[in-house]
Length: 368
Image (tube, rainbow, N blue to C red; front, top):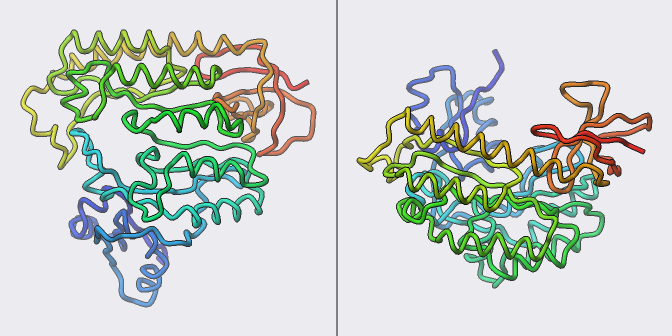
């Protein structure tokens, strides 16, 4: 009976008080700019003023200098928020409406949190934002994401550095140069393409062409030949023709992604594309998605085979979910590796593993 039930995030931002009316057991509705008020709101509920709603948004919003440790991850690796919101207004997306415009966190505050986490045993940091490449555009002091990467890489004690997510339109040469210069940045780049067709990209309002995307992918591989590229793809966007779909298939074969998240298009409340008239039949979307995923899986399996015989640094995450007699961890390229070992190991340990077998979605190895 003392449990407090809350709804937080994008749905809470969109629905607000409607959630309280519809769900009488919910005590708290928390919008995307209000998570920092959580302790205060819980205090109000406990003091008897039940059913709190906090969904206000402001153009002057600033991310607080101190972020409470929300334990977003295990003790050895954490996510660190560097910005929130988005200014891109892709026609299928509601992030600018639910999370607001881009707000960058002060670099000094980010670095202070990272140093705090490392002093408590964290080895891997993932810098987090809706579009990390545009970090710093709104700050009075002229800094950018490349500056933040270099400053973070210099923090003593950090072993691995990752980030997510990026928009190809903001992927500049200086950021790519960081991959060539900073070994601590993991050789994995998630670069959502969404479609291989310029016609579809234009209707999505993605602000780049497929030619630009190809150029950026090639530049990344030139800077860091061992980099693993992954992506997001939406299939069946309104108006997508068979030629558009085949252009996406051709791009997947050309780039040869190490993995991809692929989805059928569906309407989102407030998204501009929800009003587009030329929706595709469900059976067409399903057929195309099935063909795409078959090709993605085939290429990913071939990519995995390239690792057989190599020695890869693996950060241990724990015992394998499917085989408790084995350990499981991730390479710098973010691939899962399962292996046996007689050594005394712990989550967070970094070990060298010889890759012996490529599976569909993971690797197997040997700890010498």
